[in-house]
Length: 266
Image (cartoon, rainbow, N blue to C red; front, top):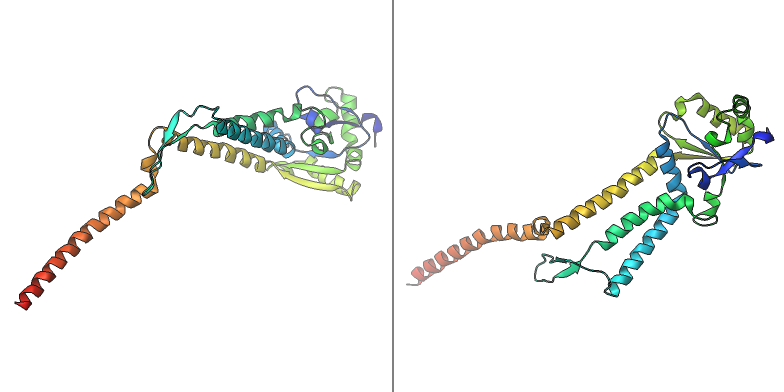
């Protein structure tokens, strides 16, 4: 291990702009990735992996705050909603405060998580010492860069965990395969964690899709189009259209039967 060039950075600092590495004795996490994948997806993956607790916490705080303000009648409720239910009529004032505040608070929480003071959020994750090639290997000095490249085996040996930021081209890159094989050889007791980037990407899509669907629902309510979407209303119309002709036929049949029996009696 070339201790003179052993430099690491905390996960929290790696997600900030213009952060610098420092001399360390070991790495908690060795981040393995391919440069053929967009850095934005890697940043999103690391943000959600380490900051999801902070996002959920701030989301819950917003829900509680809105509930308390509603209980104190401190929030304006400019819209009215009248549900279309059988034998039940009531007008409910409402406003999409919870939807709006939780949406923006979740985004703010995710983007601000790396800038929380040390010890906040998830310190065991955020403050873990990481090997990140962009800052742990010198990028401008050719001699130091060469020492860093040849010292990868030593870096892997002193890493507690190899975290693979997996994407489709990962196993097609020779350096990535080398890191996997070298880590298992140099550090047999170390932990290898597979972190596919598509997981956080799917979560982001679901997040926006959920809020988009909720926004459409509220928009229809505000515009008065909810009745056309109410399945109960359509069900009542269908039942009514089906039962009325049958009722007419039944009454006609009963009248004919009564006339026939009266003729028989006479």
